Amino acid sequence: MKRKRVIIMGAAGRDFHNFNVYFRDNEEYEVVAFTAEQIPGIEDRIYPPELSGRLYPEGIKIYPEEKLPELVQKYQPEQCILAYSDLSHITVGHKIAWVNSLGPDMRLMGPTTTMLKSKKPVIAVCAIRTGCGKSQTSRRVNKILVDMGLKPVNVRHPMPYDPDLTTQIAQRFETLEDMDRYRCTIEEREEYEPMINMGVVVYAGVDYAKILEQAEQEADIITWDGGNNDFPFYKPDLLITVVDPHRAGHEVTYYPGETNLRMADVIIINKVETADYENIEKVRRNIEALNPDAVVIDAASPVRVEDISVIRGKRVLVIEDGPTVTHGEMRYGAGYIAARKAGATIVDPRPYAVGSIRDTFEKYRHLENVLPAMGYGAEQMKELEETINKADVDAVVVGTPIDLTRIIKINKPSTRVRYDLQEIGRPDLEDVVKEFVEKHGLVK
Image 1 (spheres, rainbow, N blue to C red):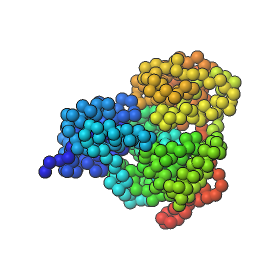
Image 2: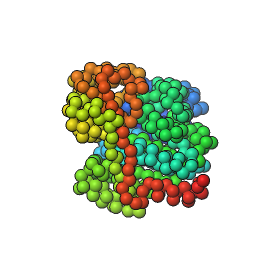
Image 3: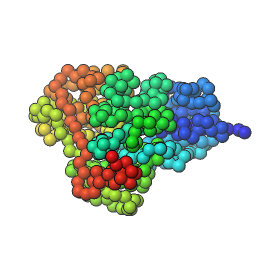
Image 4: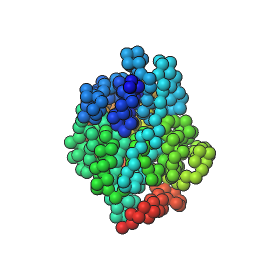
C-alpha cells in the first residue's frame, strides 16, 4: 500500500502532538517533514527517532515554513496539516490558498482525532487569544482545588524549544531548580514558576500520552493549561475559555480561539476593569450568538506593584510577557498599565535593542513602548540582558510573571508587577469548580 505523504506545519507544539497521537504509528501516512513558524530558532532541528517511532528510524527533519514550496516540490505531499495556533481567520485563509496553489490539500485536525482521554477528571483553561489571562485563571482554578484539599496536577501546553528534544519528552516540575535543570526558556518559566510557587506540580514536554500516564499517578484531578489559543490535548470534562474585551471581535475572528469559544462550558470575560463598555458588550453579543448555553463570568485582573517607589515619577523601561505582545498583538500589558498609574515616563526600548531583540521589533512593528521578554535560549537571554542594561532609564518595570532577576542581571533598580484574577458577581469560579468536584465525587 502506498502511504500518503504529509507535511505538518507547526510551531513546536500542536504539530508534534498531532504527529504523536495520529501519524506516528499510522502506516497509511508518511510524514516527510515538519515546518516551523512563530517561535525563533526552532527550525533546522530533527524530530528524533526516540519520538518519531518505528516508521521513522532516522527521525523527521524540521524546516523553516518559508521553505514549504521547495519541500512540496521535493516530496510531492498529498496533504499539509496546519498545526499551530493564534492565527487570524484571514491568515488561515491565506495559508490554505498558499498550500492549495502548490498542489496539496490543506487539513485542520480537530478534537476527535487529537484529544486524549484521561482516567482522572480534567479541567481545561484555554483562550481566544494569547495574553487574555489564561495564566491567572489557571492559577485561580488550581488554588481553589488546593484549598479544597485536593491535589491538582497542572499539565501545560508544550513549549519544547531545547535543541535536543529527547530531554523534553516528559518533564516534571516541582521546584524552581527543576526549571534550571531543564534549561527552561523565559516563556516556559513564565508559565511554570507561579504554579510551582503555589505548590502545584507541573508537567510539560513533547509526548502527552506519556505525560498523562505519569500525571494520573499522582493527581486527584488534571488541570490543562492551554497555550496561545489552542484547544486542549486532553478531553476536558470542564472547559473554561478566557476572552479579552481589549481585543473585542477576536473571539470570532481567530483560529482556533473561536473553537474554544464554541466548546466552552464557562467563559471568563477578563479585564473588565480596564476595557471600554462598548467592547465588553460586543464580546457579550458574540458569546450569545455562538455559545448561549455557557456560564459567563466577568473578571478583573488588577495590577499591583511590589515597590511603587522604585518607579513613581521615574524614567522607566517596561518589560512585558513576550507572547502577549508579539504574536498576541497587544501593544502593552500589565507592566505598561502599572507604569502609567505610577506616573512614570515610559522610554522607547527600540534604540537599545541588540541582536535578535532588534529583529523582534522589526518583525512586530506594532511594538513601541514595551520590551518583550524574549528568551528562547541562552543567547537570546544574553541579548535581552544587554538590551535592558543599555537602556538609558532610572528603573525597570518587570511585567512578566517571573522573577526575571533569577536568570538575568539587571544593572538598575527594578520592581515586579503582579496580577491575579478577581471574579465579579456570582456565579464565580469557586462556585463552578466546587460543583464540578462534587459531581465527580472528589470531595474530601
